[in-house]
Structures are given as structure tokens and as C-alpha cells.
Length: 582
Image (cartoon, rainbow, N blue to C red; front, side, top):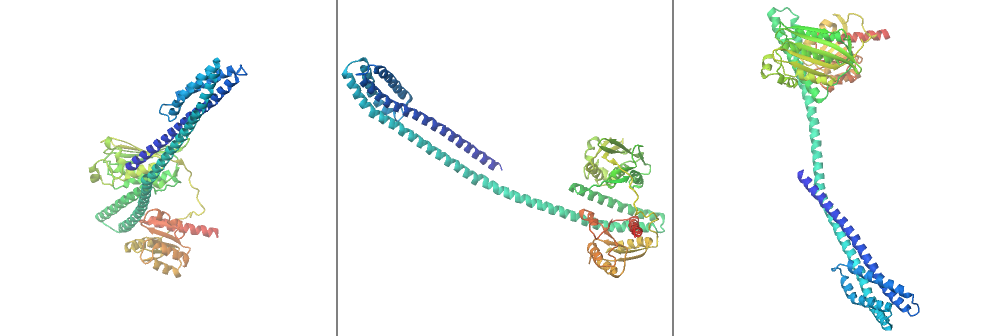
């Protein structure tokens, strides 16, 4: 690029010099034309004055008053001659003509003065002779002046044309050697940028597909591990057996938490994490925080205290899922690095002219953080020391995600800590006070799903372990269910039988969940059923599943029996509302 810049500056300089030269040439041409016109006017006046002198001398014979006119003409004649000689340079082509005129001029001037002094007829004859000789020579001088003026103008025009040609050549050279290569380079760079953009888009799409695939491939077996662990824990186990199953269950939960953290971090980095604003119960949020006391990172002597100020409203307006995630990350982090003492969570709320603000403070008596690590502790995959990850575990994503979530919600996180003195995390999030949602007419007002209820459920999942988990859950929730291996079998089952709820795994061989849902809506006896998408994927496509007419609910793996029960209760709510409307 520096070569183009140098050439461009050189071309601009050349154009500036040529334009300046043209300006100087035009000014010089005007000056020369003005000088030549003055010379021509003065020379022409000399011819007129020579004739005037002769005429005045002849008039003296019968008009003595003509002497004054003769005197004036002689004075003007002499002054004009001196002006011509003075203003005509020695190298001027007309100078030779003026030199040849000098003797004739002096003779004419002398004879005129002699006539004026009354020297007789001889003086008058000398005057006529001198005037006759002066006029042709003066004609020649005037012609010489005119020719020189024309030659000067012609030379100026030639120089002007030369400068114009030089300017055009510079412009052509600038176009050929500067702008054309630059345009080619711009086109090449544009194509490179377009290719890079396409590659970036393709890479982002591949990344999304990769994350979705990894999420599905990890969540599906995790669902199997967590589901079977929960089922095993419901059987008669010895204390040692229950301890081992719980250890495996906690390990699977840790893997799930790590996976969720990585996926959330990827969404935040891509700007794909959308926030919602809905009323939520602060009481429920506090209860969720208190349940963190069962965290696998909590040491036995550590006490967890969650408290709120009296001015904090019971209902707030915001994204409760992300607020809960942010605070749970901070509380879990505090429990992990606190060996003894307590972790105290304080919630407060202030109201200002611009809206409300939630203030959450997480104070622990843990190991603390060195001052030089206070900023970097919020960086992804970073912990206070390299040995921290080995001793306490974790990926170092929790605090980074919490900071990013706070920023997305228009808030901030502050940290004060010192080694051996614990840490204080202060979160400020703009949140307005909300109102408790009104109970809808569709509220069931009953006890929900009871064992043995006759909700007709059809489920399809290609994973054998997941089918066994579904079977165990459905057996305790409804007395009528059917479980098949793929979407094609589900469509065949629903062709002649009516089902109330259909559970479809999205990724199945033969026919996937999306295709099966479309087929069920179009041509089956269960076209009005509540269709639930079961998925281990994440991302925008899964977030838009409920916008597709085929699906009513999304159930993300790994799910618990309580989530499945809530879906069946939702079906009962909807059915009772339709019954009342009828």
C-alpha cells in the first residue's frame, strides 16, 4: 500500500506543478499582451503626431495661432518616443527598428523646433522631408510590434497546449499506474473479505452445528445416567450402594454443569443469548439459592445464609433464569472456595427516578483472591492460581459467564478480596418492581396428575436407556402409554389410535421428530395432541421449536420426572379449560 501512496502523492505533486505552471503562463501572457498593446498604441500615436506636426507647421503661414498646437505636438512626440525607448528592452525584436528611427526622429524633432522658431522656408522643407522618412519607418515599427505580439501569443498557446498535454499524460499515468491497480486491489480485497465473511459464516454455522451435535451426544447419555441413577435410588439400597450411586449422579451433574457453561459462554460470545422480561417471585429465587446448600462443593462446616431487606419487593420484572444462573454461579463459587465459616447472600432493592435496581451481595470467609488477580479472575477459563483448578476443580467459566450476564442486563459485578480474608461479590442489576401474575381461568385448581390417570401418552426415542427411563416415569404418571423406537413407528401407532400427549425425540433414525410431528398433524387421529419435542441440542433452532406449529412444548435433556409431570399437568389444565368453555 505504501507504493500506491507514494505514486499517488507524486502524481498529485506533478498535477499541482503543472497547474501552477499554467497559472504563471497565463499571467505572463496577459502581462506581455498588455505591454505589447501599450507599445502598439504609443507607436500608432507617434505616426499620428508626426502628421500633426507637419500639418501644424503648414498652417503657420496663414494661422499664427498654430504655433501653440505645434509646440504641444512636438512635446507629446518627444515624450512618446522616450516612453517607447525606455519600455522596449534591448533584446526585444522591435528594438532594432527603434534604433533605426532615432536619426529620423531627431531630424523631425529638430526641424519642428526650427519651424516653431521661424527660421524660414528651409526649416519647413526639412520638416516635410523628415516626416516623409519617419512615417514608413514608424509603420515598420508598428508592424514589428504587432508581429511580436502575435508571436508571443502563439508561443504562450503552444506552452499552454504542452502543459495541457502533460496534465493529460499525468492523469492517464495516474489512472494506469495508480487507480487501475488500486481498483484491482480493492476488488481483490473485496473478494477476499467476502470469502472471509462467507468462511466466517460457514465456520459459525459449523460451530453451531458442532455444539448442537456435541450437546445432543453428551446430554443423551447424561440423561440416561441421571435418569437411571434416580430410578436406582428409589430401590432398596445399602448405604454404601446409595453413596456410590449418588457419587455417580453428582459426577454426571458436574459434567452437565460444565457443558451448560461452555454452551452459554459460546452463546454470549456470539451475541445469541436473548433476555426476556417477565414477573418473577423473589421468594422462589431465594429458595433456589438456599437449595445450593446441597451443592457438592459445600464443605460440612460451612453455613449458607440467604437474607433480604424489608424494602425488597416480592415480585420483580426481569429474566429470572439468567438472574438465577448468575447468582447460583456466585454462590456455588463461594461455597467451593470456603473451607469453614459461612457464605452470606444479601438481597436489597433500591428505587430511583430511572427505575429500580437489585443489589445482591455474596460474602464468604474463603481463601480469598490476590489483588493482582482481581481483574483476570473474570476472564474465561481462568482461576486465581494454576493449582486452584487441580485442588478445587471447575473450568473457570462461572465468573466469566456471571459478569457477561450482568453486563447483558445492564448491570455490573464488583469484587473485593484479599488472601485469607474471603471475598465479597457485589452485583447491581437494573430491575423494576413487578406484580404477581393473575391466576388464569385455565388454572386447574386440583391436585394435578395422579398415578394411574388415563392421559394417553405416545413416546418415541431411539435410545434404549432413555426408553426405559420414559417407561418408568410414565408408569407412575399414567395408566395408558406406548413407547416406540422411531418417528415412523409413532406415526403408525397414531394412525388408528388417539393420544393426548406425544413425546418425540428430535434425532431418531428412519424418521426424526420434526418429520413425525408434521405427519401427526397432517394425517393421524392424534392431530390435536400436545406434541412435545425432546432434545439434547441447544441454539436458535431449538429456541424456535415452539414457534413451529408442530410442537407445543420443548423438553430438554436431561429432564426429571417432575418436568414430565408438569407437562402432563399442563395438558390437564388445557383440557379442563376447553371443557369449561364448551
